Length: 521
Image (cartoon, rainbow, N blue to C red; front, side, top):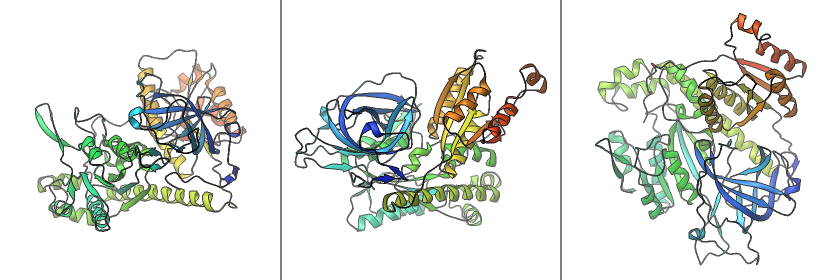
C-alpha cells in the first residue's frame, strides 16, 4: 500500500484497526481523523523530526516525520486523516511517518502552500528512539490540484556485498530502461571511480552539475541537492548512500539525508549501498575483515526502500575482476586481495547481504498477508530486551541484539539501570553514544532508576512481556562479584529462567584502534 491509499480492513495482524485515538494501543493499526493542536521540531537520534500532536476528541497521539523540520499543510488547526502502526514512546502513543491526507473543515478539499508553513526552531531536547518508519506523503503546492495529496518518492536500492559487484552499472541500466519508457531521469550523482565501463554506461542521461566545494584548500565535488530539487525530475540517481558529504558542501552531513529530502519532495530515488555500511552489521564486518567501517547508514533508511535488489557476484568472480584492474587501480590490487578482498571475507559479506535481503522479502510477504488475507493471523510475539551499561564493547552487544530481533521480527528494548552508586567519569558520554546506536538500529531506549539493578530488569521484563533477554558478558573479577553480592549475569539468568524468559550472553568485543578503513565504491 503506497501513496494515500487507506486500508479498508477491519483487522490488522489479528487485531482490530483503531478508528479513534481512544481505541489505540501499542502495536495496533491506526486509521483516524483529527485536528492538529500543535507542532514542533524535536531532536531524534542523529537528526531531527517534525512532530504534530493530533487529537480527535477521544485522546491525543504524536505524529513524527523523520528528518523533516516541516511538512507542507500540517500545522496547528489543520484537520487530517492518518494511517500507521502505533508505538509506545516515553508514555505517549506515536505514529512514525504515517500516510496522511488533509481533511479541511469545509470538506471540499484544499491544498496548503509550503510557504505558509511555520518553520519551527530546533530545540535542544533529549533524543528519542526512532520507530520503524513507513511511507510518507506530502501535499503538492499546486493551485490547480486542490485536494490531491502526492505520495513521497519511491525508493529503490541496489545492495551489494562489496565494491565492484556492479551496483552502479545496474542502477544506470535501470535508469536507461525508465528513460526509454518516457520517465524524466537525471543523474544527481554517479561515482565512476575512473572505471571506463561505468562512465560509458551514463550515456546520454542528463547530469545535474555537481557542486564544487573547497575543503582545506582542496576542491571536492558533491551532489548539488538544491539544483536537483529545482530541476525536480521524476527519478534521480544518487550513488553511494553511505557517503559523508564534504564539510560546508550543504545542509546535510550524510548523503542518505540528502536522499531523504529528495524522497520527501516526491522525487523517486535510485541508489546503491554495500552491506558493510548498515549500522547493525558494520561492527560484525569490522571483526571479520579487520577493517574499520567509518561510513554507516541507519538500518531504518535502508528498510524504508520500496525495493531492494541484490547485485550478486561470487568471491572468485570479484577477485578476478580485481586482478584485471576493473575495480581498483593496479597499484592497490595486491593489498586489496590479501586484506579486505580475501575469499573468506567476501563469502561472509555475501552471506550477510543474502540474509538481510531474506529478512526484507519476509517482511513484504507478511505485509501482503496482512493487507489481503484477513483470515491469516500473524503477530510478532517475541520481545527482546538488552541490558546495557557504559562498559566498553556494549555497542556491539546492542548491534548483535538488533540483528537477532530483525531475524525474528521482534521489538527490541534497550534498558539502562541507574543505581544509587553514581556514574563514573566518562559514563555519560559513553551512554550518549550508546543511545545513538540504539536509535540508529531502531530500538526503544529506557532508563530506570533503582538500587537493585537485577530486580529492576526482571520487573521491566515482566511488565513489557519480554520473551528474551540479552546480556553482555561480565567484566567483573570473581573478587568484585563476591564483594558486590554475586554475579549479576547469574542472578538475572536464574530469575529470568524462573519467569520463563530466555537469556543470551553475548561476548563484549572492542574494536582495535589499528583497524583500517575498508574500500568503498
